[in-house]
Image (cartoon, rainbow, N blue to C red; front, side, top):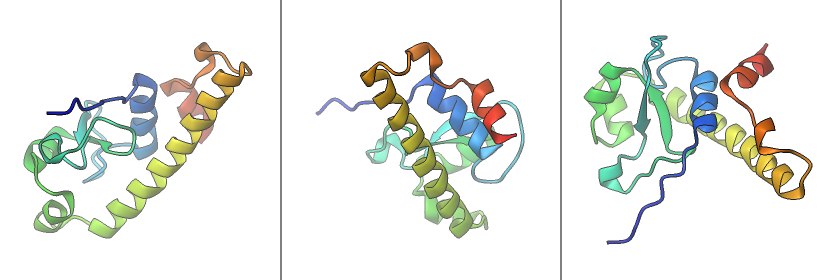
Length: 125
């Protein structure tokens, strides 16, 4: 079996939590959000910026390893809104972190300058 790469960094997780502002599925603003893979690990998913969303404990345990769109329909949650927002947030954060990696590689930015949860929150203000 091939080794699967899980490359979600703490800075990326913090940025995801800030961007979603709560549970990606139901919108709950609980403070203890869990990492949920949109495509479950058991279905070939990985812990990556484009596949992980913050989820409340209730949604995370309910979804388990279900396919996300079918689960959203069964729970009567807005599938279209989730997919659109997931795309927008994933694209924006992927671009942001790619630019930061390029800056570090070019020497115009130091790794300690990479965004933390606080700097990401400040940008939204």
